[in-house]
Length: 328
Image (tube, rainbow, N blue to C red; front, side, top):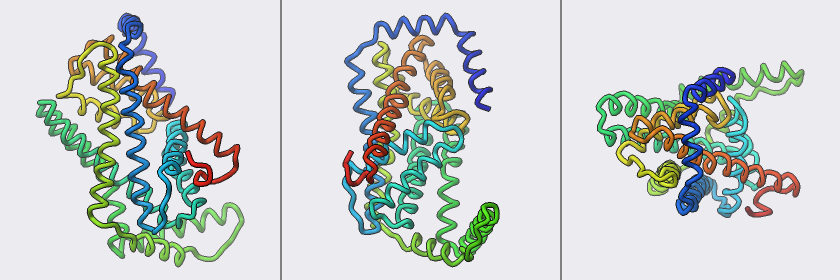
């Protein structure tokens, strides 16, 4: 699938060779005063993720410094966008392990990461549902906006059902216990049944609560994460000398992010670029400007953030201490 995505990108590049040449010419006349704003927006997007996770982790009674959570956020993101298919899962596993090293209970860490992902999906659904009507297209509002919003909310319904209803929890418990039993058999390490441990784990997770106002705060931070990332795109568009198409910008952004979330390539590499450039052209941006803006945006939001995350990871591995001990 990755080969197909790369081949499709290469074919599109060959067909739009003149447009690509013009886009590189556009990059030569970049308006650099917009670049610091784009970087600041992206930094704000990542900071919003870290703040939302820190708020959720406090449900277990442990307070972490924001710098520590920021470091885990950047390093986990670097893992997530660097690996195909299993990248997000590996990034979450890394964050789970790091929070455990900082004294966070496994159930609390798992709950915080799961709820963070759920609320982020809800915020993204809000972006899609709001961006579609703003574009003025009834087809987009009914099909892309609402359809994407429903798809984004499916994980929310599944997890809430697993925690709220005993029958769903018992079924999930049996499935997980069977998977663990198969894993033990494969590695020839028999052990006791995991059903009781899983039930205690789920009981602890379902007992965690936050005041409603804190959930609203986490939702606002998750929404800020998406909005700030989209504003980074708007600054990139301004940097290439055109006005952002505000009425269609959030819909174009949402469509591209949805396409990249399929997981064909690491961090949606190639997929997001093509989808976002096409969406911006559809929104009225000229082809050379759209491609140039997407290249600037992805250089900041993907490459710069990923490199920063791997640098933090290198410092963590070199010092051999939990992130909490060393700060950001």
